[in-house]
Length: 85
Image 1 (tube, one colour):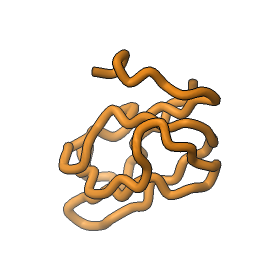
Image 2: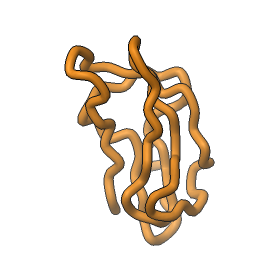
Image 3: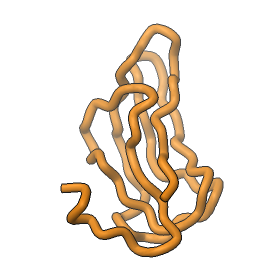
Image 4: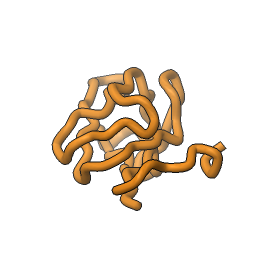
């Protein structure tokens, strides 16, 4: 299973908001897909996945997430969402 980590958008902020998610849990994404939009007080940023597969988000739209936090997992096979709740 591969982790999707929240990148640092600005040097002054350790927290950003998840404002849009483009995939449902366990939907298949490809490497390079935009999977969400993050927003700081100064800018918005497209969150791009580096690994293709079934995606499962740990956060939901509206959540504030810390930089370097795992926001989702991507797996070659469907992910049992129960382990994340």
